[in-house]
Image (cartoon, rainbow, N blue to C red):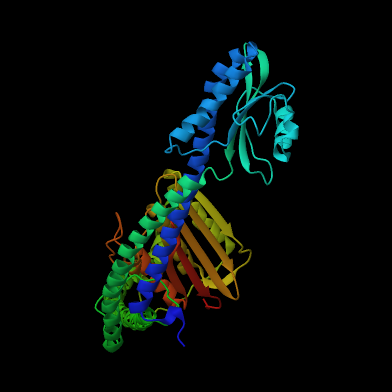
Length: 486
């Protein structure tokens, strides 16, 4: 037997819709009925307060003159009006006036509470009411409902000009709300029923109309196999109905499409880099020839020339610069031999010295972290070039007074370098072209820095990855194996 979640959408959408409609109608109806009941209670309190104030205005002078008959006529009037006017919604049970000693002064029904009778002797609920009047105090109308009582009482002190003569008691039957409440309830049930009679058929009609095309789409998606015209945003769905099978087929096709696209992109990228690499290798060979000649001439001049100390210092500076150029050009040659001295902590310090002035020009916050404390077997020139290129790129990309962070460490016989910077975030498409030569993303440069870095890293057998470290930081992560002999 199928679970309800595995039913066809032709049945599930109308069923869920019907349940939601029923719950909504019942919730709204209950809320309105509760509000109507609260309004009835408020109306009763307001009616009792108005009646009490009106009656006390006439009862007070009658009590001052000890005119019992007049007091009876005053409190009897609302009862007589109620009998004549059958449309009155709040029916009175009785009205009662007592003095400060809790003795009956007048009652709308004298036989139920004779004159001068102690109200405690009338009934048990009047005895409880007497205790309430004694302890309540105050000069306003108060509501009192004794436990298991047949009446709802409202008591109002008869006070005027600080003269307290007694208390006016108004009694309503316990079910005083019921006639009006049942009428409101009938109207509410009628309106709710009419609403359900309209919404439920409409829900079934539109539910099936929406579900049938979805079922057809599921069947066609299963037949389409690997073909997929466009990408769709979706969320995971764990039930085995038509929608669940649709997502399963979509996931399979999307995975195959992504794999195919990634493979094609890698092939294009490899072909592009191979072509550029061949061109760069040819150019590098042509540059190396005059470089070697210049270095040889400088070496001859140093050995046989009669040079002043100042000239010798200048020539040595030129020699170091030409040597750096030769090493950098050598990185462009795929078959280049990595001959160089080992990387030392002093090389890391030299890089920090070189890039600090450029970071200071943009007032950047430069975070520098290194755990290297000894020489490691990696070519110093190439690793220095990698660090300088990455840091210069980060400084250029960071906004004014932004952040640049550098970290280098050895972990499991591999050198880990991380460079982060704040600034403009790149899309996945832009990140995929970062390491291409003459990249259009380069602002104010030739776009070769990251490409040269990429070539050096791969010649050293390592890997480099660019990604978004957070919502406002880009990160370059570099991994090089130790043991490259110089």
